[in-house]
Length: 325
Image (cartoon, rainbow, N blue to C red):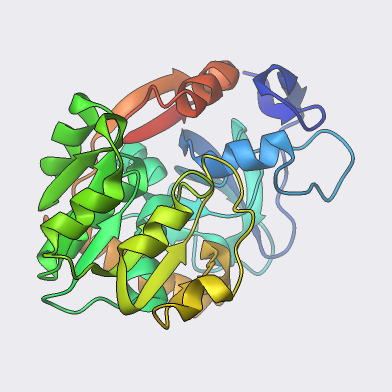
């Protein structure tokens, strides 16, 4: 079968995505060729495709930043992996392909009881959830936090992990189905933002005190309300912008309650291979012992990546979505 990629010709809407046949890639020193079995879909892919995140090249960008598959070949000097090993990775760009080469130190070996589909759907989202609650705002048992997009891929993992740590998590989601899904994944309460503003409900749920932290991947539509929900010295963690980038934010917005704000990016937390390995092991352990579960709720053929992007942008998906080559 001919190998192929899905390429964004230029920055734009989902119509810029097209299938391109390629020669089977060959690994050089330090690289591994991975035959993809499943590829994760994330808003990050849309940020790249649309040009919201600037391109390093004028055309023909291959989106996708998480996948799982099987090692087919290794380059010179690679000793930790061999053909037949099952692996997963999160790495900026290039995952929308039937096969690819990637540096060996970006790959994590998969435990036997974690499927390719789950690995592809959880590796970026799970590592994101890990750094958010261990580093961006390290939670403590007894904390109360707010999580936007609680029924999304990262949101469902956060709800479970926070509950396991003894943290009270309040979520927001759009519509009864998403509210019910989030409630089934560890949230103490879930607010349907379509039924009214979330700030008064958060304040009511916290007895007027507010929360210690907000994990906000929505951005433009939520950031002001997120700040309003924080108690004194609280932390605003903005790790995405599904509704658009934040405009108008100033340091004065933090002064009223001596707040903290951070805009973290996953790849800064896993740049060191040792850090990637440490966080990967923690994620796999949480999946193996049942702390976390990941249900694949949406599947699209890789060749229909444009349709998958449309569904994600329309908020027509819940939980984890994968692309199948």
